[in-house]
Amino acid sequence: MVTVQFDPSKFNHQTAICGGYKYHYVDEGNKNGTPVVLVHGFPDLWYGWRYQIDFLVALGLYRVIALDLLGYGETDKPQCENPADLHPAYTPKTVASHIVELLDHLGVQKAVMIGHDWGTGIVSRIGWHFPERVHCTVAIGNPFRPITKNFITISDLTSENPAFQYFEYFTSPEAVKDFDEKVEDIVDDLFSEENGNSEQDRSYYLENLKKGGFNGPLSYYKCFEASHREDLYLLGQRFKIPSLLLIVNNDPILSPEYCRQVPTDYFDNLEIDEIDVGEHWILTQNPECVNRKIGIYLDKLFGLEIKDATSDIASGNKGEETNQSEQTDNLKKLNKNRGGRAARFGRPKL
Image (cartoon, rainbow, N blue to C red):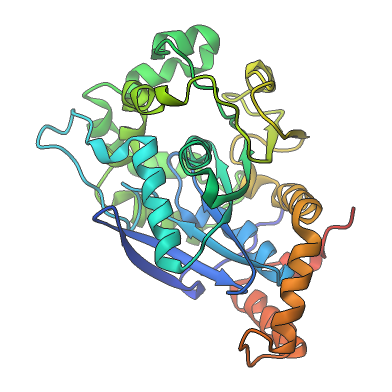
């Protein structure tokens, strides 16, 4: 793929206090459109969604919110006096509650929740614990796991998927120090040109992953037992929210075999789709395919509703001063300023 150059400073950066912590996020697109919240994985940032942000904004139908999770980038990074201990703020339900507070701050009642990698765990907890705040969910590369009566240990997970053997090391006392010392090598490896990143992209990742180190990002790997306790009251409940699972067929860690092991009968409304070209860093390796599949799914669920809302905005019924022609011009200008190429994809058709 040809790497498109984005300028992170051109996005609309904001902060809010959620759960007592400062969260950094970008807020783009149609403020009266359907809200879409993008939740990144490990060790990513809001910026990992740059292609998806531009794509959704260019459709003119969505308000797109992408955040740095707790412990990442410009968001706060709480830690215990003993760095080896888990700070309770990192448990999935707690972080999910922070994102719900962000919705409150933005005046958003319900949103589409999209997660990648570890972000799907947070998205699933928003769906489990705060279903009234979610239109639908999209899990990219990592399936939602059902609530189980017995605690599933890292050893259990490794038996289920041997590719997870690195979890043991990631939860070890020496992991944070090792990651902090090798952050440049990590960025060069994970955010390479092969994975869809430019030199400027790598510089942005390096700057932001150095902020506060890896104590926060690695804390999510220590949350399994705490998360089990938080979720146990949901045992036996079905996941009622419409959901899309995008399986990345060439992901070496989250393989299609692993993704399909997760039982689907506890979902009320689950669609499964696949992406053949690209690996774990699919958001930037094959953004055209990811964007197309997200767009088709959202258009199928909300197309008519969104079109009606957008029609009101264009006619000024909700106090907007901008007409449809001006909106189009603004979207073109936004894409040009960012280096985004979303406009050329067009709106997905069913």
